[in-house]
Length: 81
Image (cartoon, rainbow, N blue to C red):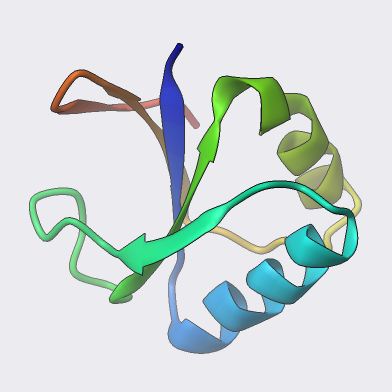
């Protein structure tokens, strides 16, 4: 099963996203942003594919402001959104 990583423009957006996602009971892992993806913010959120629709719904409701979402397959990261 694939994993996804959300990257943010700044730390404030990452912290607010973590709060919103946790409030919905979505399983996430807060992690350092891989530097080969972006260097804009040092905090990212990783989650499993089964949580993708819930995370996207929160983003549509503007409770999660993010820069990009990447799909992680093996050790490769590919831009998802």
